[in-house]
Image 1 (spheres, rainbow, N blue to C red):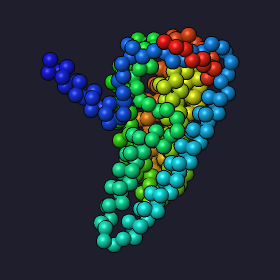
Image 2 (cartoon, rainbow, N blue to C red):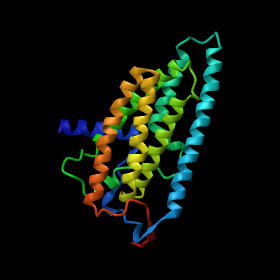
Image 3 (cartoon, helix red, strand yellow):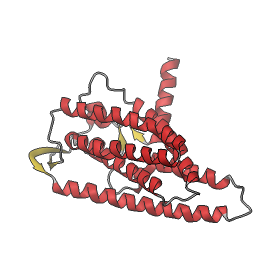
Image 4 (cartoon, helix red, strand yellow):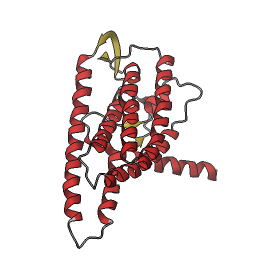
Length: 251
């Protein structure tokens, strides 16, 4: 009883921090289905535009932080560590809540993962927010190290590529978790979050080897995630690997 209670508290805490909603999966009707093999061009354009706009907004936020930190560093009344703490908090918010800069529906939910067929080796749902919370911490540490190595600048290539990586991950979440496009999710997770994680880790490593080493754990996890997405696609019908046109259906 006590172990179950503690597990429930842990799950609630992790889901609250990571913004994951359990939802009522038993009574949630399917709102749309694919009735054709035709490519949904509108969806492709929405994904691209949403991702580009999110990247643009986050780059503007980086610019704002650079101006703010510059003022703080030039203020002799504030301690030297103040800008570092502020930067750490900024990267923490960015790592956990980057989706707040996206125009796409980026609801974090267990609904899709709970309802689809999964391979036997698939981790239980609670594992994902826990691992992503750990990765968020590692991202904060590594990004602060890069920021320090770049003389407290935010508008630098490593950090710009980092926000691109976050935006690609949010778009993939829309495709897989929200819209349940299992086919389109396969190439997107490989060319988006996984490949961009490798690129960001490599350039972090060049900037500060410790930062790259810390961030490399995310590459391992995203490799596992990419394989899992591929197996889920195989087990659930192997639909075409592009967004299909959907038709609304009534309950």
